[in-house]
Amino acid sequence: MGMTYVQKLLARACGKSAVALGDVLEPPVHLAMSHENGALVINQFNEIFQGTGREPKVWDPSRIAIIFDHRVPAESSKTATNQKKIREFIAKQGITKFHDIRGDVGGICHQILPENGYVRPGQVLVGTDSHTTTHGALGAFAFGIGATEMASVWALGNILNVEVPGTIKVVVNGRFARGVYPKDLILYLIGKLTAEGANYRVIEFHGETIRSMPTSGRLVLCNMTVEAGATGGVIPPDAETERYLREEAGVKEPLDLFGPDADAVYDQVVEVDAATLAPQIACPHTVDNVKPIGEVAGKKIQQIVVGSCTNGRLDDLEVAAAILKGKRVADSTRMLIFPASWRIYAEALRLGYLADLIAAGAVVCNPGCGPCLGIHQGALADGETALATTNRNFKGRMGNPNAEVYLCSTAVAATSALTGVISDPRGVN
Amino acid sequence: MATGKVVRKLGDDISTDIIYPGRFMATVLPTETPQYAFVDDAGFNRKLKAKEIPPGSFIVAGGNFGCGSSREQAASCIKGYEITVIARNFARIFLQNSINVGLAMVICPNIEAEEGDELDVTGGKVVNRTSGKSFAIESLPQARQAIIDAGGLIPYARRLLLERPVR
Image (cartoon, rainbow over all chains, first blue to last red; front, side):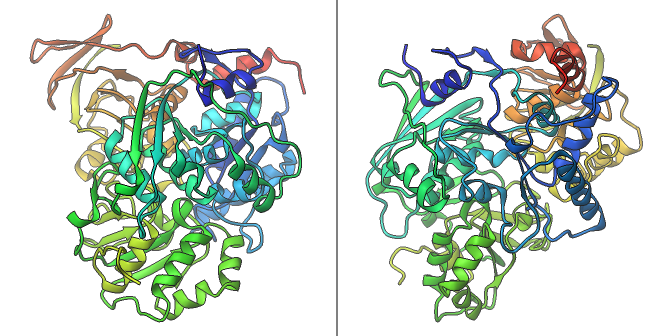
């Protein structure tokens, strides 16, 4: 029986010729990523070694990546102390893929891994962050795990008890209308599948729309597959994957590119005509509460957020700058920009995007996760409404359970910044 | 498992932001996380902290309990009160985190119970003693049973580590 992409990937990773749905595997981990929650991982890691008479030592320091991004620069002494503890551990263990709070190599983990060439097709990649699904955009089987699970990976080098997942095949054809973006596609899909519709399964993307989509858009799709409950999202690698890895991520060595079997068996096949999509909005308080923009246009917004691991890339800043250039953020709202990495920040600075955004009244903050989950800047007041290009709108998400968050594309966010109400980017400019 | 009362009934898609809001994520140790369990559900959080809820009580929820973040605090904060979560189903990372830290959880696709009901979890089913109805339990994936039997992932991983040569 034919295998899906992830089934094939797991078979190869485990040195087997084939795996079947539900098989329990312990694949070796190619890359293990953590951020500030590494503080808890270290605690659990040391506990595993307790009483063993062995020195706590990670299985392979070159396969661990740690990126400070959730609370940067530290917002409290507690965070600063966690970060200090992690730095000491990194030095002691000889971990090399470390991205500290720096303007040259820093940024959000889900941008840092791709842009530094840490992600490869065929990898088993785990991260103590649910949006680790992002890296399926480059053909890895990438998924989120908890801190104790990561401690076990650091000690053993395998991820235990992985059940071979079923796969939902999503086939997307047709060209997006002007003003419609990959974010609208993934929001539409989450609305259709529901927040638990892909639980314990992988979403594998196919079709002409995906083939012609740059990696930046593919990262958006895979990033949000977890919002439908998926273990991972994946795009079988192709010429664009290779282009990105060579040209943007500086990868030199040979790549192992493969696809799913032609006779692979899927749990479900979903077809989408991208040409018929309108901009989509995820309404409070679940990501699957998705409506076409026409149903919510006109809603007053007090805070617009552009950025995050979902939509903080250079093309997002380009879109936002093009819409805001020479114009003005409405007085009734405020606009925050969080680029996904300092590399992107520097490039947007060089290209003049940041100057255009600042001149329009936007506040450009340093790369980081903070406002998306309400832990560092950009908190909302009681009764306020935010419109964000981030990935979650759960009650309390932006730091206040008495506020509301709507999710959208960068074009919707920037267009709405000009009016102070949810506004359709189609037909503007 | 034993008998206890339903102390909180919750709906579908209870996210990790509801269970353990992001703003408390800098607190990581299982000994410290329970104080922030359901902190935005002020009445419930107060009862938890005042120890008004006996160990062995139940939270009953709908589908997709624990969706969202991978933060393990969401499992450890409930575990701190020795409460069992019964839900129609659980989000993947939360389910795995619960097994790893030893939070008792029960997958019960058709559960019907109200706050105050007395439940008995036994022999593959949940018996609601108040309503007299009983509901089948869906067993956890077999792959996870070895970790549960070992008392959590830390002792399980320690055992595997000791089977391997010293690096």
